[in-house]
Length: 563
Image (tube, rainbow, N blue to C red; front, side, top):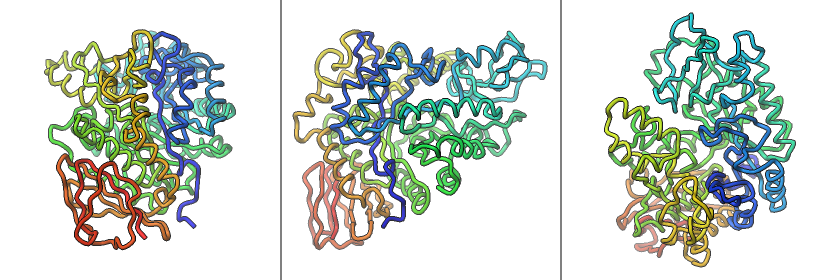
């Protein structure tokens, strides 16, 4: 029936939870596992199928849990393993699947392996990490995402050596070239699968393979460390081995976070015949409004819709007959989608948020929603460096201060670019701290929770962003053509409207999405509208002139079923 084989992870809708910011029950101002358990009925009401839970493992929290001290224990702030088991059981009883984060490119520097590794050059754990002896001189340049000096080599006096850390100095990179390290990782994966976890989102998975001669960066990369990091010599060997030894033994899903992976390399990861991953997140869209390789600076000129359309059309074409894609507009590492890709002004916020919901749920590929997207949460836009908690913002602030670069410009940039925009607490209601906590929150709550951007208010409003989201999820679930159907772009050079069809056998759909704050008229000549029916609109729909001309309100979304 389908060109693609039907799979639960293709047809499911994913809801990502950042646990620190979802629901606090302990009163310490930090979200916890019990908080998620208490909200499972709400999550189930969204009609999502899969929960992606950001790291809850034991961690000193240098990078909010992505620096893991113990992969088989729970962070004290989040609760206990018993709390986790209760959460997982609650999900299973509601037919919800759980995907966790596999952070295996690096550990915390407080992990037992690294504590042993740095003790002596002949320690049995020494080769679990990447070390460069100081007598060989300064190691070749490697860039770090979170280092205050942007240097990925850190000198460690105890053994007169440098260790490699692509991220924070407290996140030393694991040496996957050591088979003992790989078996340790596989053992961790088995531990969670045997508990009943349904899959992993794999953090920066293309970075796990390194050239252990640590050469100077080849000229062809021209300073693009991310691309270099993603093309390690043994990467596919490692992914295939992991699949053969562990992943293939369970009915699970895998999605890789894949910075640096380009269109021409995509099927190397997800072609079913290669037996590596199910899907991955590419970063072409996340780079669209960023300035060159400086991935955290926003461009001064606004991105173009034709560029947005080309990115999604090109990636859809890659997976048209093989592999499978993912569709996302935001996550814990990027700003809120309605603020970034549409318009969060009071006038246009509702249509903007619902239009983006329509986009994600009518494209081919598994849709990923970040918690709060369903109610249209927006960027916080913090004014002061003291309000930011993210290591990336704080360390870059210090780096810029050292280099006498305008800190005012940096803060203005962070209002749009900072990861903390996505990490403010879930807005449940209009009570203190938006119902997230009854004490001081670990990070400030966005003040607009009192202006209708909260769950309680929207549940009561039939026309709310939240209730539109639920309707749109149902439309995707009851129309498999919106999951598996072929995609065709229309009006490819139009800078205001994104138009496309989805076709599966006798099912055919037309989707029209306005990305403009102006009323826009378009003409669709390629399609017969003789027996067309409107499935959903986030605003009043208007059709004129023999059903070929459409006038769209600002940020309007229209989905038609065509006979």
